[in-house]
Image (cartoon, rainbow, N blue to C red; front, top):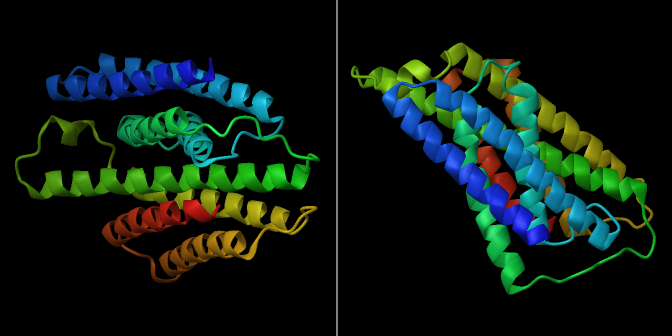
Length: 256
């Protein structure tokens, strides 16, 4: 049943993205609002998938690469729903959906080819669960920061084209995007810090490669924040840096 939840949620995110693109081209904002409800429906199905997998393993469902990808997608969607309105970025969900769709398609293919099955732990370590959950929630925040960076670059390109399309008038002001990127980077780095600290309290110490990978991601984002607040990066370099940093974070997933 869990695979059905995942497949349906993936199709919902695809439908939501297509609907949003069509509505933006036609200038109809009502369909964009419907996109929000589709995101909520997709989140519910993601949650059901993770619940089923959690019950299968008797622990946080991040025991293989496919589950990790779905957990990151769940983090992206839930953080968007929690913060999108506060950051005045209603279209953040629209730009997030292709990423969620792609990751979940990879997860579906991976599970269909090689589902390792139940992997219950000998003992449940709450510090391990905290470490894993906070680290992947951080990846969700970093992903949203990168997506907001893409939105800025699209906005910037539209502005410089001297012939902006309908999308230009639907995107939020550049100031909102810049503020959102900074806040999401702070939120993600704070979550990752909690996750790394929790690792040192685990009953079984994490392997060196895992710890180095997490530390490298934390260092990249800490340096990015320090440079931004020290030198006040302009919006474009900050946007590009948030995209590149998330790309680096994704590369390290194989070690987590």
